[in-house]
Length: 392
Image (cartoon, rainbow, N blue to C red; front, top):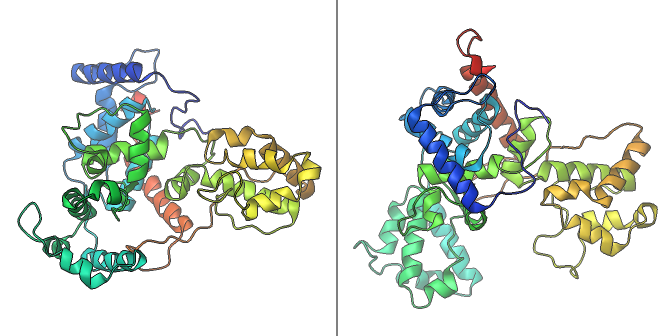
């Protein structure tokens, strides 16, 4: 793993109380502006925040505020503060929102109404009846329809739906998962990921009655959960490009696409390099997908049963998959057939689909754009050695 890029990857988690205590201690150190000892290469809190502020693009307002929220996330997750990691966050944020906390989405109101009509039809409801229902006054006086017409950001749209769910009879029970806004904030992080991550890790800020969904649409929360999704998981990539791809396509998508590439070489069966090893939501007894079927054709050569193959593939969203028998045996077979070591990370071939996307974009397009921003950020953080020992 490239030490200049890699976050402090951890194979296990410390107890929640211990991490919370470490975070509190880091904030105390920040207040004292302590200096690292001569034996340590770690940046002091003040130097770390200065690096983060310097890494931001020239157009960013309130640079110290952005740097402070970034530092709080890094400290809470114990992620190494270095130019590679800092610039990864900066590059993704600049690509996703241009450093807008709750970015404006052009034509959002029309997109929202189109989605409402589509969902109504899928539920067997008349779009006209639903639109009539939305003329009822909301908690702030305006009707829900008026608020939808005026919505410009995903945060506003999400709040409208949250209010509506809260007032409808049985809304919390029937519609809790029907909010159409799935991503948000300055890093456009998945709200489902944020809620899942918060279940297992201490959140360093008081919620004051707010939900984690609402926190995603704040600067501090959007950065915290976006940084967690980007950096707080172990991945042995030799280039940040593949971590950018994972941010867009899902954790370990680049590693899994490389496995699919090796499986194609070993079996002769062409596979889509999308990083999905089993059908989403599929249980152990559900029909196998194309990757699983291709692996089964090698069962005798790999000396693995269908059940063993399935068990290993189901670890595809975790670090452990790279240590399974299936992963190791497929690469061993493919490398031998190809006469060379096949790559262990490959760009996933995924066409991006979203109501917000009006042209044909791919995960590769996203990753390359972020990489360009990453490189420009690294240029901004470069300081002559004589001026900053900590930057070496």
